[in-house]
Amino acid sequence: MAPKNEKVVFLKLEKLRETIEQYNFAYYVLDDPVASDSEYDRLMRQLEALEEKYPNFSVLNSPSQRVGVRPIREFKEVRHGLPMLSLENALSKTELANWLDRRVKRPLKAVEVAGTDIDFAAEPKLDGAAVSVRYEKGLLVLGCTRGDGNIGEDITHNIRTIRAVPLRLKGRHPPSVLEVRGEVFMPKANFMEYNAQALEKDEKLFVNPRNAAAGSLRQLDPRLTAQRPLDIFFYGIGDVSGWNTPDSHSELLKKLRDFGLKTCHDSKIVKGLQGCLDYYSSISKKRDDLPYEIDGVVYKVDSLRIQSELGLSRRHPNWAVAHKFPPQEEITIVKSIEFQVGRTGALTPVARLHPVFVGGVTVSNATLHNVDELKRIDIRVGDSVIISRAGDVIPKIVKVLRERRPKNASIVDAPRSCPICSSDTIRAEGETVVRCGGGLICLAQLKER
Ligand code: IVH
Image (tube, rainbow, N blue to C red; front, top):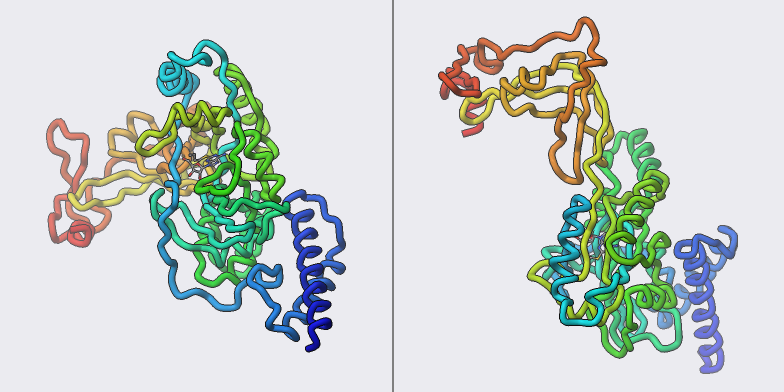
């Protein structure tokens, strides 16, 4: 090819890539499309055709290359330049007030801001999978999971398939290194739609949007990840060089947006404890209408100078806290009460329930500790009960709704014989536990041992 012609092709390719990435940005980051699907497809086909014809000019950071062609063999380990910490939790107003005193106000005593209401950047606590994405000279070079906080897995091949993640930062002077941290999630509507289709195709369903996001990111084949409707919000930075870090977290988020990185629109600057609590209640009210799943809100001291003064503890930053929502509850009906036999022969009652979606998962069983519990909470087959499931803990029956009890609700007693081996059951004096007396002739006990 003559050098002149070569230059024309090169410029044409660059122009196509830029336009397609602009369309992606408008569609996936701004939620405000600037081109029709057919126009987008036409440009993408043109780009692919040109790249095929001139393979010397094809680059990894082209929008045509988002979905790699081959699965990777295994995940490589990546040590994070700066650890990816987790947040301390506050489960109530009192815990939040204590956190504020202990971690922020007291340590700042000597400093001028101690007496005043500190500015916090308040954000939804997204329920997805934390990732770190590294840009060098504006180009995406690495994406990884949080892992244990120090070492994560290299999931670059999958991160690149998420259209809301720019392959190249916007702006003329990108930092030499910019590591951004954020949460990959599957929007609620996409999660429901995905599961509805999976059900039709007889494929495995996702338990909740968080699992959907985490599972999709841990695929070896990027072509699978590319089919999952994933989205991202960035909320912080890691390793950075060649950049003047802004003075506050809110400024930082603005700068990230200028780079074309998507941030959450529901964040806000609030003042002191009262400001945090007001934000918490306003987000709680909006929670069900938000298009993404959250399990609380996060408050971060807005000033980066104060953040660095407060510093880090071993696992958490001292300048941020997660204010979690209370456990989620749902009402359902007890279909039956059965007994499971454990390793020691102990019989544990299990309530089989009409399946309900609570706290992000479908619950159809709840254990009841021991036979005395049956009497204590007076639970019967046919009863309506309140099931609670907080974040990632085991579902619990928190209340039996006596006022809803049907006339034919039936009491269940501890069985006289083992449901597995039919040996007589025994209950020692003063013990709450009923056991199978079969010892090792009982398959349940043998198996468990
Ligand atoms: S900041 C050093 N902001 O919560 C601070 N985290 O327990 C690091 N998360 O692993 C986190 N939404 O996956 C931050 N707006 C938000 C968040 C958020 C969700 C997750 C994140 C992290 C966990 C912390």
